[in-house]
Length: 152
Image 1 (cartoon, rainbow, N blue to C red):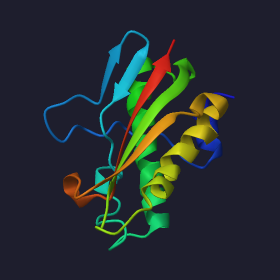
Image 2 (image 1 turned 135 degrees about the vertical axis):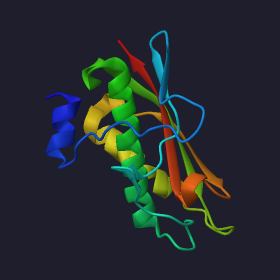
Image 3 (image 1 turned 90 degrees about the vertical axis):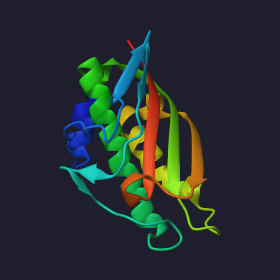
Image 4 (image 1 turned 60 degrees about the horizontal axis):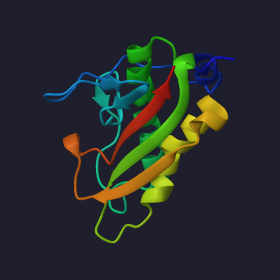
């Protein structure tokens, strides 16, 4: 089963690549690595959730937002390599979480992205990860996800 079929089996679909919000490109490939730019929880041009974790946004909503971000990263990755079957491994994921000052659940929020990657790629979806609390993110979104993938 291809990664695209696994995504469909999860009841999801790969979106169009989110247009850059500033002066950057969605992906950069160097050798057999593809780096995605940070992806935010945007679906069909609409921001899905705004606010900070631990204030206006709860952990479950943060996880759902991280999942959307990861799906957007996969769309950018597919646009770069043609088919997600070209992905040999998800190497690293960085999740930025807009957090209230006393919020410490960034790893739990980041699991929304990590678990999706595991569902789509199995063992090849297991990755190194950083979950970083930040004061704010573009468009007042609660989560931003970037990844590095090894491709064939």
